[in-house]
Image 1 (cartoon, rainbow, N blue to C red):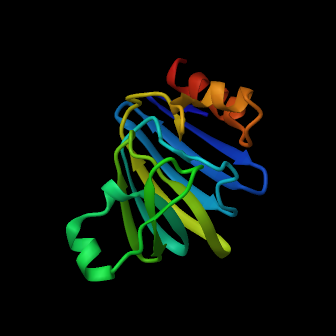
Image 2 (image 1 turned 90 degrees about the horizontal axis):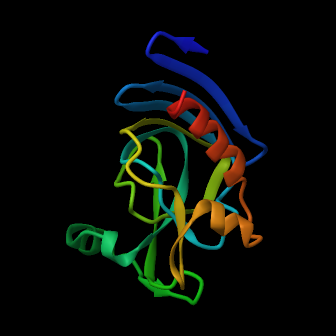
Length: 168
């Protein structure tokens, strides 16, 4: 629905996630209901910087070790792990309401698990600064190429909707 310079739409991704998105000239305001963890084996990035306010439920997020601040290492005693799929050393952090998650668009992450009942978030994002994609052993792979390799995810539906909104 167009509202002058604003566009509002709902985007459902099956039993994985539901999103309500308001697009404005400086980015988006979104409500996400995350119902399942990410189905892809690799961490991914987003096409924009964002701040997410978790207001109900929560999730466990996988992040590369370099996103862990020295303060977090000291206060929380995170265990850092490594495996072939992640192609880097990583850790897990739990975010439960009320919590805030800030992220740069090029920062990899992956939702490992979701609380029963899911996680509800209010997300404020900037404008698109890059393509969405995955971090593999081969390096960064654009989402379209990643899904064409037979990986899980519904990037095509997401990309089509984003292109319609941002380029209309």
